[in-house]
Length: 473
Image (cartoon, rainbow, N blue to C red):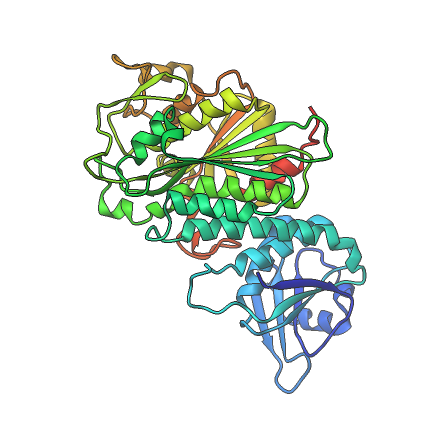
């Protein structure tokens, strides 16, 4: 990550960035800066940049950055636009208004870091310049900058993992990344299950059975040392490192992006690492069922009966509805071993909800109004949209099977029925939520703070949600 720092020193050898927005007092940016903004109307829209070249003068270049109505989202959009307007070796100073809130500073810094993301294996060199945030009271914003840095670091990790090509990324590799990321961090522990240790994980073994790299099950836990009886939140992320669809093979157009099918696992991993970095007073356990849904002689078949961790069975007629099978085992494991107070599932589970909700909004399912409200609030603050959908009781009929406890892949109302299927494995946990985030896990092009490719969707929402909990039972 490139450097962002707070400073009180103005330097006209740097590029100046002057925020413009609704009701921004001109005096906050200085007389010369106010004069520059006065001659360029119409640049107030959030994320809009106006470039003012100034040959033979200092500063030699001025950017007017629109912050809209100056809420956190507007400043986040401004930050992303600013960083994309800078060259790699350019150092810029952003002149902050005197009334800037801590939340706005966090939004600006997150936008700068997220908008400047590059995949680590890309041929472009990292930035050598930096961004300096100029304010008369820099120490006021230390906490906001630290929160932004932790959030951006987590999102960069989730994006890196999701962008990694399937020629590199397989269940074993992913599990190794978790172990390496947690190494040496106090309060974190990692358990990786493989081989015979997965005997009870029938869904995970079925989905990963045809791959040359067998499945893994990873448990990553953060336990705050200073809280006697912390609230326990279990995060479960779908971790299909590549999805061919199995014997129910996907069409070519649908398969090339299936390296993103572990985006949920990447997000819950990143959020748990951030919880440890921020020393949040909440116990967090991330469960990552990792498998590659491949084609081969050992692939599970449409019509197979699969026995899950708790001994119940699922009939499947579509091997491309594999995510819910591995999640079922993880949820069973959580209810059997971990005694969670809350469970949250993140999964690139179906593409169906994209028809109604578009590319930037996830589907939220939860029977718990309070939990759903907290997630919606966290998502709004983070800039990750979600829309709550129902869990209709009369749709449970679609899950009936003549040979098993349930049908895993009926053809009706895909996203809703998938959520109802997962509900079967929540046990006695009343506070749970499922986020179906297939569409917003990937961006076709740069869009505000999103960069082309993996978005790391969900990591920012989970960090905000966990940060807002008081931790105690």
